[in-house]
Structures are given as C-alpha cells and as structure tokens.
Length: 101
Image 1 (cartoon, helix red, strand yellow):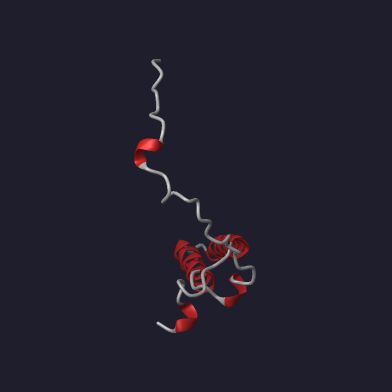
Image 2: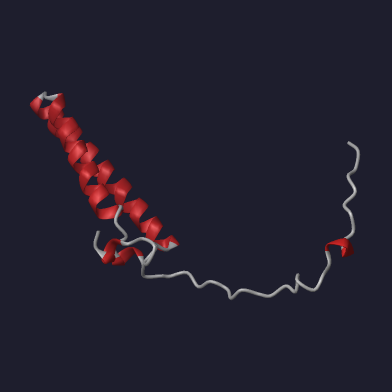
C-alpha cells in the first residue's frame, strides 16, 4: 500500500483515536436513524439494512486508515535511562521471602 497509510511510520495518537471513534459512532448512529426512518416510510426493511451498511462502509473508509488528521498530536517518548544493571551481580540481590497466607 502507499506509504501515506503505513501505520508503523505514522501511528495514530490518543486524540486521533478518540476522534476516529467519535466519527465512527456518529456515522453509524446517523445512518441507523436515517435507515430506520426511510425503511419505515417505504415499509422495506431491506433499505434500512442497505443504508446502515453504507454508513458502516463510509465510517470504515474515514476511520480505519491512519489519515493525517488522526496524527496531529504525536506522543513524546522519554529517553532510555541506563539503570546500571550491568554492574550488579546476580548474587547481590536479596532473596524474596514469601509470606504464608
């Protein structure tokens, strides 16, 4: 696929995930209401299903790829800290005691 959609290069951030979830739920809700009303008026349950499926497809198209609007607040990772574990020997640690319950 195109490099624009590669999730490893440009992952979504937390605010982008929240926005995607809100867009997804909003489209599903609106399409369900429109589908129910149209299906009720025409007395055809099939139209209700088709409209809800079209809303689902649209919401998947808008929310599943990592679009740039979902990557506006990148995470700032802390630098790796050296804890100095190489200097300690395994025998220097105190053994853990288990308490009886």
